[in-house]
Image 1 (cartoon, rainbow, N blue to C red):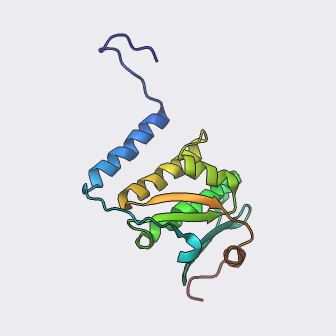
Image 2 (cartoon, helix red, strand yellow; image 1 turned 135 degrees about the vertical axis):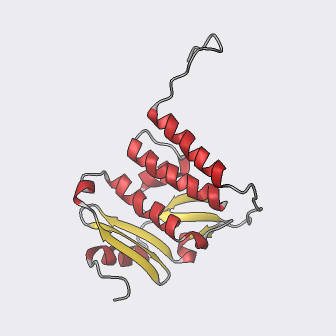
Image 3 (cartoon, one colour; image 1 turned 120 degrees about the horizontal axis):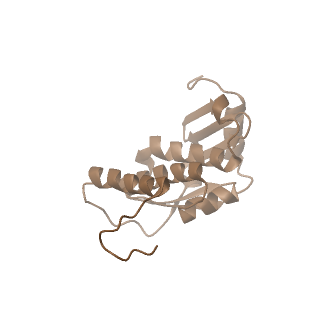
Length: 172
């Protein structure tokens, strides 16, 4: 960008404006307090927090005895698998906020692309960035450092897959 005079205007992209709106939302709701985080990382395995998706059927998450599972709406069937994998992670961390306040959370995931995107907190895909912004905002509000690591073959992932395939109502 080559701005010569201070009265020249800078035109922001839609994505840059979305980033600024996320920061504005945080600033408006932040109380300015923070605490020192523990030196140790808490893993999603330790918390019994797991997510998984079926690209064509739906998504699920388990947190101890709590869980959710839902079929993909028809208008989301065409989304790429990275978007679908990211969605239940963002949703789980947003709705079960009490599990991770003021902590360092190492979330285990079986999708390398999602691990890289969350750890970078950046991506060229606009839909993924929308989810990343939401995730970053939740982390900022709750004073959480979130990092993902690749994990394959976890038995709890089988449980979340089972939930995805058997959409039962919670409590049944």
